[in-house]
Length: 125
Image (tube, rainbow, N blue to C red; front, side, top):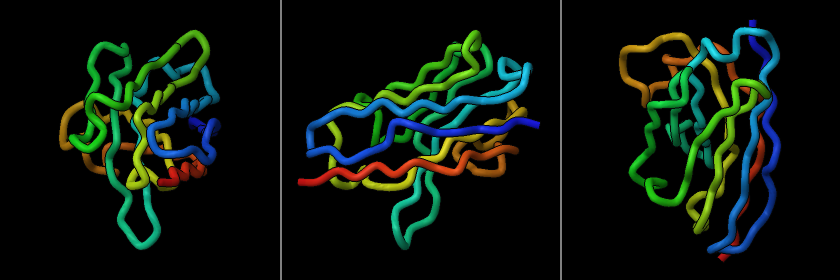
């Protein structure tokens, strides 16, 4: 069982930055691939980024590539999402997720077994 808790959300102006953090409970954090998803009002939850259990492999949605950076610190049981050059269309609730499926469509929510409660990110123009 893994429990996840996001922090770092808030309100910023376009062009600003935020750093999200997701702290995980349990001793096996390093065994899980971690992902970030987001959900805007009236829209489906969409993939943002994923990092492998070792931290070597990283994947990004085209919409955030070059602006967002995912990282993890297995010693601190924490995964981060550094978000730069934020745009109003980045406004959403951001969720972190943990999973042990290492093959398949990493864009899919079905790759993940555990989810956090989410943190709101609002970007104003």
